[in-house]
Image 1 (tube, one colour):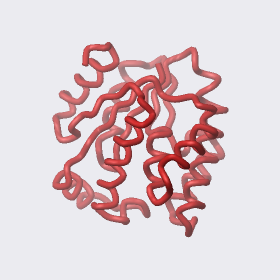
Image 2 (cartoon, one colour):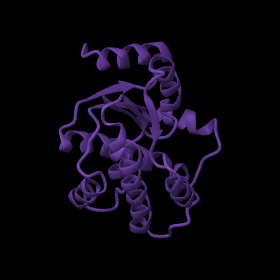
Image 3 (cartoon, helix red, strand yellow):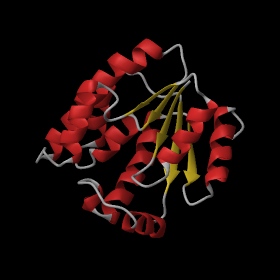
Image 4 (cartoon, one colour):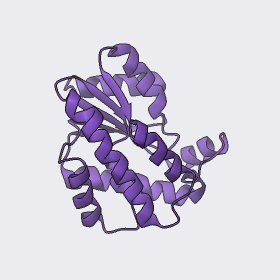
Length: 190
């Protein structure tokens, strides 16, 4: 299983990944961007706003993704892999570029290796406003509420265009309810 937890910032990915880490201690846990030594550098460049053009930012993330697939995913395809973000985020955050072009570039970067299970934690506008107000925001979060909601919608479009196995979960549910829905999805019960 190659499971990814997706969602815009503050959706609760980290909380659910911590729970999965306890349930699947033998699994390979990783993240995009930043799951490799090169990825850590690329992630810092992207999140600090170093790339001034959206195209340059996308290529930083594509470089990270290609390295991640080569170093982490391919060697562990026989194991359970659980990732914080994936190709879905990469395609979605490159929202100023044509969706088909971005998908094609990401298929190259991933060697067409896609997640087997995608969990998308969805936030309402009101919940997102509340959660962002409670934290310090990075360069991407500072782009605003409407920007992040547009990314969330593009995540759904991307998942459906790629026809990937997925579940959408309301991120305002309790931690336990979300955990149960993810478990049901993993076990083929949702």
